[in-house]
Image (tube, rainbow, N blue to C red):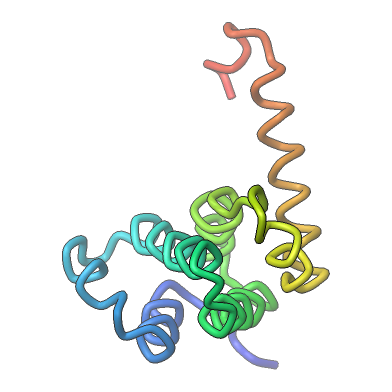
Length: 128
């Protein structure tokens, strides 16, 4: 059985696919959530520009990592990747169609989770 993907795998694979992320990654060494946040920004920019090649390559990478992440990477994929993807605007529907079913499900689950958190009474939110 293959080992789960780790933060190091994400960094290696993301920089191999998108060397333009190196400068952002180097600004905050070792901060997975910050780096994971740089990743969807790149995809959102690609979506805005209609650069579907970059967008699809990013979705493929995210899907591969989503298949078998370790706990730390799964948390980053949920909180700092999926949460930052949006499907608004004129290219949003097409971007949504390019997501894999697994990533769509993950995005929807994250949206439900965020809605549940905002629905909690203020006192209860502080405890969770």
